[in-house]
Length: 483
Image (cartoon, rainbow, N blue to C red; front, side):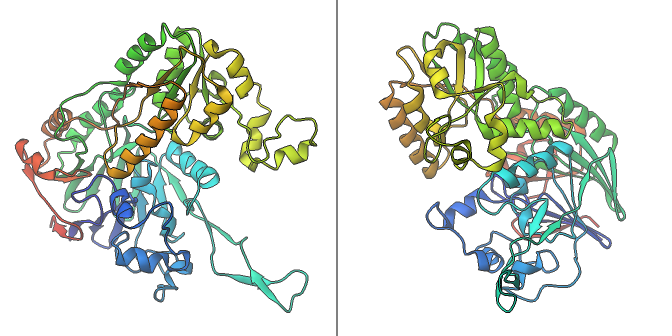
């Protein structure tokens, strides 16, 4: 028997957790966080209880109630964890949190199959992120060890780490009786893949997130061409923008950025997604055209370094940008009144790697030469405008999606207050989506020609019915049998 069960991404954007069962093999296609459901219950000031993660998340519908899936240290606080896993792996399409964010809860003996770029981004998230980020290394919780100074007493053991098996995709990956064909595709983060999976009931296509208007649209077109050859019986297709027709592309965005920056007399200040290296490339090229250099933050620079170390190509090199080094904590960096070790106390270990880079720049350098730079500054970095002091004639370019919920509206309102304080309103809005338009989705389905389509990652799954295909609409937890 072969079946598909949506444990996420049913009638919502993101939260992909799609269970594929074929004979005795059970794999998940992604295991992501549902931002919508999370936002229904939690805020930055109302956070989940660590000791009761599994219990609370199952009851809130954030995790499926499945045994043999979750790591024992947390599940044992809710119920007795099974000794052996009952699932054979997770196929990760890409490392956005709505596809990868809940892998942290999955037991270490269930391997994750991903691209090299996907693995590198997960490692960066572990080291630089906040919250519960244990994707490749699981730190055992609630464990005691003898206290070093007095072995008769016990203390918390925070040093026990279990490595998860991370399998890097080849063109063809075997998981028991399943054969998974992976294809790099265009999306707004590096390491994105779509798949064709050979099952006993026929071939299944899973798009993950995909677009056809980015820098690597040829990858997505090649995937469609190859997927057609498999004559799939089922296609599981994302539909984030199924009702939209616009396909404004990354190269068009780069062209418009050059035009926006060409006559700026002051500092160009920009905001774009932190891990979107294609958008970073657009800003690098636009800045270069007008005689400036893009300045990124330390987290972005560290991401580029990790990608380079992992041999990931087609992303900007760290020497193509400048790295902004802000004053933190005591604010004494480069202050000779304080010894170097005291200065470094304000920085995390991974940040220290950035401090001595030859392409590191400070607020003083940007303030003295504003026409030399394009300064990336997102919502959480607006406070640095006090140090940079953008002069008259500066502009702010916002290259992120428009607000889609009340929380994003509130954040934008606060951002506007900051921009107004520094005379940066009205800002310029220019953005390119990471998802295929409705016309592109329709064209993809018509070319691949699956017998049936399950829409996911969309709030409007019924709109797929206008396409020339048999559409299967399934709710959360509903099993669809292929055979």
